[in-house]
Every structure is written in structure tokens, then in C-alpha cells.
Picture 1 (tube, rainbow, N blue to C red):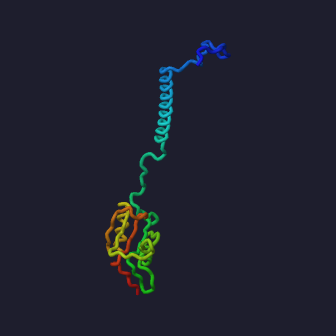
Picture 2: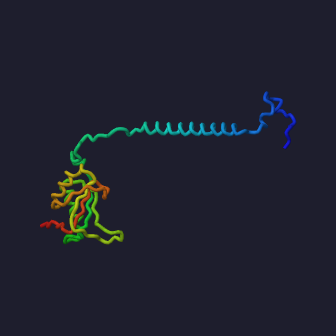
Picture 3: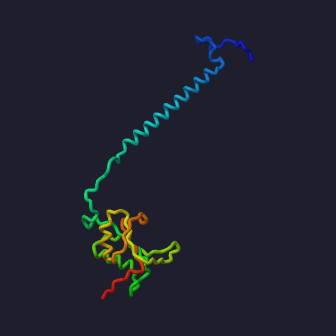
Length: 180
């Protein structure tokens, strides 16, 4: 490669004349790497700072307190109840035990959301031996204990297995009340 280059307009316009053609040294490459690395740290730090600021300005800070400590303060505040019939029983008119018990709960003033039969994935009925009341939180224990008296005092357990606050699972030991 030629070591002498003819003068051009860049050489004439520049005080340093021809510097744009100079070879890059190791020092130039290291300085360029430090500049790029510094710019990356600056951008990453700014992004981190913005995300921390956005996280700190959350509108859901603190604890939301419940004005009424008891979920049974009024009848409207009663938690929803679901009845699952695992007894496999029907009365003389072929009404399922779960439907009858749900009606009894409604007449006693409880907030019954629905009732259903316990079935497997193929839609075949499943029966279980003992009735159980499942609550999602200890807040609902008092309400569940009231319902347990109507059912014959079954076990009340806390579990997140069901979506609703209170779920009553009827077992085969449940006896349909005789109406006269």
C-alpha cells in the first residue's frame, strides 16, 4: 500500500491534515471500548433507576383494612356457599340431596351460590363417605360452624382447593330430611 497520498479537500480543510487516514492504535481501540462500555453502563443505570422509581410509586401501598371484622355482620355480607353433592342420593321425587340441602341453606338465610353433583372427568357420579365443609380462610369459620349444625356437625377444614369462600361437600352419610 502506498505511504504517500495526494492531498485532497479534507487535508486542506483540516488543521490536522490527513488525520482521518491515520491507522488506529491499540490505545485508540481501548479508548473506544471504554467509551462504549461507559455508555452501556449509563443506559442500564438509567433504565434501572426508572424501573425502581415506577415500582416505588405503586398506588397499592400499605394495608387495606376491613371496616367490619366479621364477614357475617349483615345478611348481605354473608359469604357465598357452594354445595357439592357426593352422596349420590335423591328423594322420592328424584331431587338430588345437594339441591335439597342448598334449598335448606337458603331458607335458613345463607347465601347459596350454586350446587352441583360430584363427578369425574367423564361425567360419572362420584360418591364419598363423609361430609366436609371447606373454607378458604379462618374468617369464614363462624359461618361454616353454623352450617355444620344443619348438616350434622361435619369436619370444617381450611383449604384453597375450591374457589368459593365456603364449599360444602355432602357424603353418603348425609340423610335427606323427611318432609311430611
